[in-house]
Amino acid sequence: MRHILAGLVLSSTLFACAWAEQPPQIYGVNLGSWLVLEPWMLPQEWLDMGGQSCTESCWTCISTESSFAKAYPDTVDTKFAQHWDTWFTQGDVNTLKAAGINTVRVPLGYWIVEALVDRSHESYPRGGLNYLRRGLGWLKDAGIQAILDHHAAPGVQSPDQMWTGNCTTDVQFYTPYNYHRALVWTAVMTTLSHLDPNFGSVFAIEAANEPIMDAALTPNYGTFQKNFVQVMRAVELTLGISVPSSSLSLSVPASVSNNFTAALNATSSATIFSAEVQAALLEAVPILLDIAAGCGLQTIFEASPFKRSRDSLVANFIDVNWQYDNPSNPADVANGPQAYDNHLYYSFGGVAAADPKSYMTSICNLRRIQADAAVGDSPLWFGEWGLSTQFNATDEFLSEWADAQKLAYSKGAGWIVRNALARQWSYLEGLKLGFLTQDPAAFHDPNVCVPYMNSITDGASS
Ligand SMILES: *[C@@H]1O[C@H](CO)[C@@H](O)[C@H](O)[C@H]1NC(C)=O
Ligand SMILES: *[C@@H]1O[C@H](CO)[C@@H](O)[C@H](O)[C@H]1NC(C)=O
Ligand SMILES: *[C@@H]1O[C@H](CO)[C@@H](O)[C@H](O)[C@H]1NC(C)=O
Ligand SMILES: *[C@@H]1O[C@H](CO)[C@@H](O)[C@H](O)[C@H]1NC(C)=O
Image 1 (cartoon, helix red, strand yellow):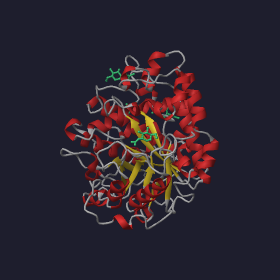
Image 2 (cartoon, helix red, strand yellow):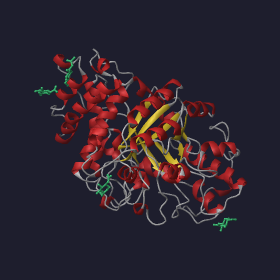
Image 3 (cartoon, protein in one colour):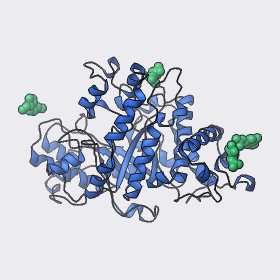
Image 4 (cartoon, protein in one colour):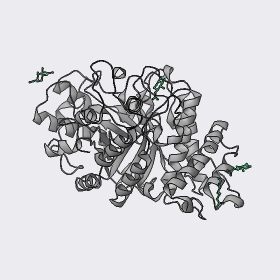
């Protein structure tokens, strides 16, 4: 995993009552480039595998999992098996544990559920699910909990991005066909999270990473959000899990109460759910039967009562203020525990002027948490950020920059550093170089923001 880590801290109070299984303070990292490979995080390994480094836009060469799979149909699965096997290991889990990390965010592609890939025109490596299961099992044994992040959604949710698995300007996620596939994915992941013992570390599922910011380009995204929540809750109600503060209830017919897929099949005709949710549940049934057979989970799927290990999962969304142009608010469709995620990168421009003082003034006066809370998007965590800058930062500045961001994000529900290459991108690298404190809860200088507070400039406010 080397340089891929990012940090996450969630403050305690917001979670204490709702989600009993969560530790009072959460410190985490993204497992970036593991199950959704982004070549810029591992440039040499990517070239060694047979990938390419494009000089132009990422669609001009082999820069994503799909273009790799297309170029190497015969060897893609073995090449990726090797990557999955070595990029994230038991040793990495031990290192994370020793660094005080207790949560990870796991970016996933829709293709982790292989049946969802339309092989007539889509190609992706196969076999990732077993590595995911193994990794989640290690995390569970280490007492580290996980967020499953639907990072690369079917049809691609953002143009020209390697993290979507398919670098293209032809964005097709915001269509009935691909929303549907994402909902089937959600049914499968929710089921595994509750029934597969390896998934015992999972506490949240994120609907879709970083939708297009202009909501005019994401038609019916709000309906998808609503259906996403309903799919999660339908699976949970089928398992006999009561969903706190939910308006939904369901009784599973006794005739199928000892067979999960049969029970889910029955739930798929429950009219409390929309037709689209019903259809997604029904389509998940044969996929789950296949996974159960392949992973040896049949006896668990057919146990009575269903041997689930935890309460309702947290439905996690990118916050409403990520989008503009009249976005739909995920808080409006809450049914059971929900949490929100925002990503803040100064290095891509548009947040603050490119100098240390502007960065500090901006972060020390961040208003995003309040702006989100005002419309119900709370608790909010910062699921991706980093120490990267648009200028050459001194070591001294990077320590202040780390402190100030941690301080700002901890006022909400916490933070997740974007994990990646050396110095300004990697959590462990940041630790080693001393920019980040060994204890994730600590600061070099808890008063680092004092000189910058209440300034006029507030570039990073929502
Ligand atoms: C990538 O996206 C394009 C445009 O939507 C699509 O035609 C193509 O089939 C996709 N490729 C893969 C491998 O999914
Ligand atoms: C699903 O339920 C229908 C009735 O609603 C039943 O006819 C069918 O056999 C069931 N299929 C499975 C796979 O359990
Ligand atoms: C459980 O239900 C599925 C249909 O969803 C069926 O294929 C399977 O045979 C059932 N298992 C048992 C033990 O009845
Ligand atoms: C950062 O430093 C490098 C090497 O010293 C230099 O080439 C580059 O132009 C500098 N970048 C900025 C943004 O100042």
